[in-house]
Image (cartoon, rainbow, N blue to C red; front, top):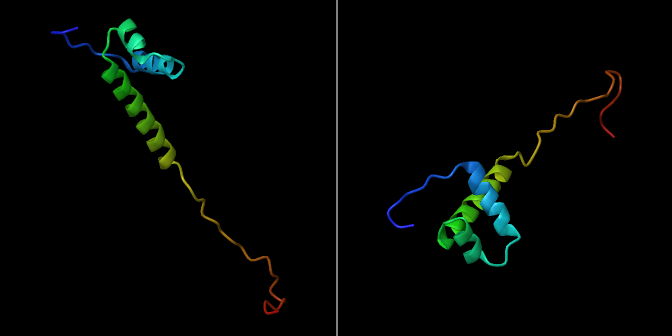
Length: 78
């Protein structure tokens, strides 16, 4: 592995990270894909942060608009 720098597509990273979710031996999985275990954990962390960021970008509240349905001749006071 020394002396070369590989570039991974997003699809490749996602496939490896997905495989790691059901894997008991991260070191073996990393060796199988010719990456370091630390790289695998970095990709897992980056994916987790991306998912959390996407969730937090979703609106938490929806604005409410209230319209009065009282007729003009009704008294609004109780």
